[in-house]
Figure 1 (cartoon, rainbow, N blue to C red):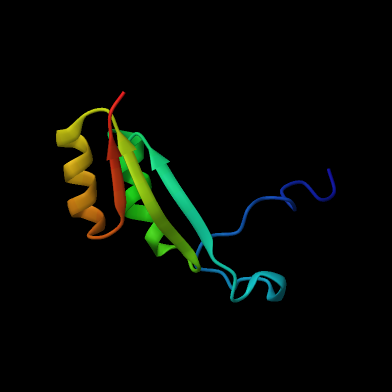
Figure 2 (cartoon, one colour):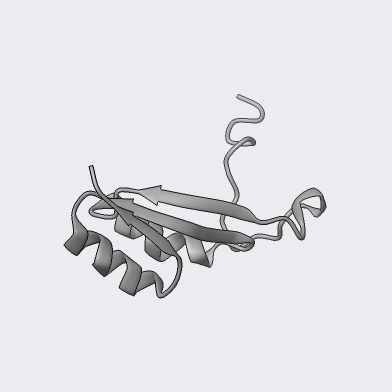
Length: 78
């Protein structure tokens, strides 16, 4: 099949297209355990990505994620 895989996403290390250079992607993460902590660790590695808030109902899990990130607002509650 011609073109198979042509629409696959590029890795975070590849150059950002000119149309998005200088623009920021602001992200809030809801749920910081399991997969969420992976996002806390990996999103800052993406050029122009910025975690602006964290939220979790478990205050201990949230505090750990805030410490991992080292900055940002966070919310705890249900």
